[in-house]
Amino acid sequence: MSMMGETDPKAAFQVIVLGPTGGPREDSVTGILVRSTSTKWSSNSVVAVDAGTLLAGIIRLLEGYIPECKDDQGIMTSGPFQGLELPYRTAQANAAHVFREIIGAVLITHPHLDHISGLAINTPILEAGNGPKPVAALPSVLSAIKNHMFNDVIWPNLSDEDGGAGLLTYQRLVEGGNPRFGRGESRGHGRCKQRYHPESGTHHRVGSTVFSDHQLMLPSRAISVDHTDSFYSPARSPRLLPSNKEPMMATVESSAFFLRDHHTGCEIIVFGDVEPDSVSMGTHNKRVWETAASKIAMGKLRAIFIECSYNDSTDDSYLYGHMCPRHLVSELSVLANRVVEVRDSNTGMKKRKREPVGPSSSEQVSPRNLSSVDKDRTSESLIEPPLHPSESFEIPQIPRVDFGDILENPDPETWADTTPLPLEGLRVYIIHIKENLTDGPHPGEQILKELQDHGEAAHLGCEFFIPNPLEGIWI
Image 1 (cartoon, rainbow, N blue to C red):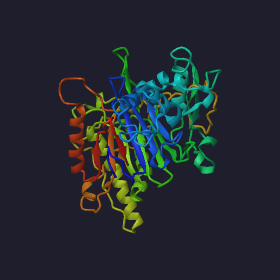
Image 2 (cartoon, rainbow, N blue to C red):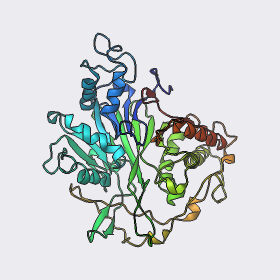
Image 3 (cartoon, rainbow, N blue to C red):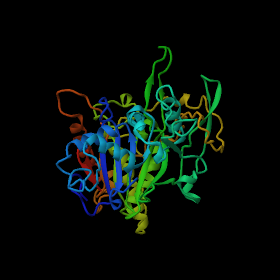
Image 4 (cartoon, helix red, strand yellow):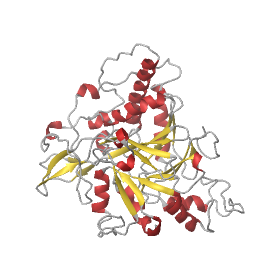
């Protein structure tokens, strides 16, 4: 498995991180291209995960290689797009070709601007005659994009709904399953809540919190996308309130996508914004790790792309729904513990027992005042959210959970002497680093060092990397 640079003939995936940061630069915010190496760059063979940066990143990459690295047939001979036939002379024209013809679908983890701005700005270059390009996400995410971006006010309605231009088509991960994502059990199921909206005086449906495997098959049939869980990884932000009131945190629903290469059965995970379970006092990430653990134990899950926005000097109260190294390693320890349990179960060994312990000194748990969580909640109902485009979704407050479940920290000594270590062979790529734009070292240097130190102390066995946006990653 080659990390970056030269082609790896054994790799199942090639990943190009167009935008590795969480801002403030607008040309390098989150945007990732993924393809199966079995596709040979065929039409619609690439899936984009998030679209804060698309065309700008592709142009930047091509400018470094065109025309020196094109052979007589127009095929790139080196660089991230090695093997791709580019029909035009300039980087700009070829980038448009990649967006129109090679990217088959765009997956959006959540609707924050640094994950969707490129989608808005880039979409007008699509050609209606080629059919609309799929944009797949949770109903709450697509509702936000539809109502607040492609709404003929902030930006033209470029979708194929409500009389739009028809350049994009929304594919919703919905209650009861979407036939576009497979048949039978693969269609997915979830539960829907309703909550009273104080501004409008009406009840709005809330996006489903749990989905079983939704499969979105690209036209090439090389990659499927399993959206196994949504979680309130909320990219949180403070709201200004009168001084006599408690601060409120706005939340949005975020996603983790499992991408499977059908040629090899190998998978990777790409996360959106992530809040630690120990901070949210929820178990949303834990559900993702439960799904991932068996895939790691079987040797199928090769890499995780996950955010780590700040270094450990950042207090929990200023993370605003993001990760720092101490929390990411804590989350990965939950995954490691589950991998050990799965391996022990598969080999017939007795399941290890752990005693619940309090939060460690390296992990700043910030329990929030949960007394307000239940104020506006109504009883749950198994209501299927309609596909009506104007439906407005609102995200529920994080539910009250058992504190014992949150504070049960895995003990790395449980697996310290195991061979292999629980996450050995797994590559963890760090994205969404918040740049400080100072004369000092890049913040990623400190973040990477802290992750490596914590990971070694936790006996995880995984490797941490910060992607170079000028190179491809072979997995």
